[in-house]
Structure formats: C-alpha cells, structure tokens
Image: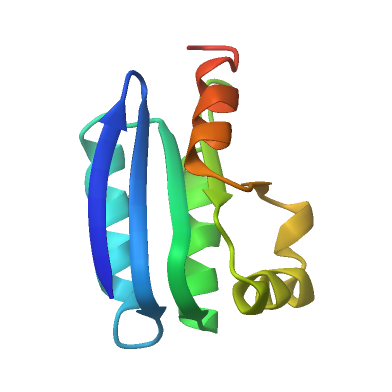
Length: 116
C-alpha cells in the first residue's frame, strides 16, 4: 500500500494505492490520525488505485468517521473500483459514507459544506 497526501484549500486528499489489509490497515489509520491531530477536518480518501480492502480497512474507515464527528467535519471516499465498491455495499458502508466518482467532485462538495 502507498499513501500520498495533498491539500487543496481546506480539504486534504489521501490517495491510497494497492491493498488495505491486515498488514497495512495500521499504516492507513496512523496516517489519518496524524492528519486529524494536525488539524485536518475535511478529508477525502481517493481509492482510485485501491485494488482490495479488508475488514481491517473497513474498521479504520469507521474509526475515522467516529473521530470526525463535529458538524464542520467532513469525510468522503472517491474513486472506488467495482470490487471495492462491492465490499462497501455488502458491508453497508455506501449508506454511511459520502462516495464520489472523483476527488475533484468530492473536494468541490466538501469545500462548499458548512464550516468551510
């Protein structure tokens, strides 16, 4: 798994490529927790290059969503492959998370959200 981080105005985008599984979920969680600790409150996970996510990765997503609980906080996913989207749908995550086609679409929405 590889994670790259970019910031556009008030939105931070983590681009995750490869696999999020039992071996790599901790690194994703650490990256997200560090961003939040540094004050990032609008975060997009760009999964365009993600080929697999395990239950460990899903747990990280839930934990992050619980951490970002203030009214002005935003957390979104984008670029889900067919397989990753299938896992999200089966886990019921498509009704929990805001999911966008592209990071640009997600960013435009998050920047326009209350608390921007």
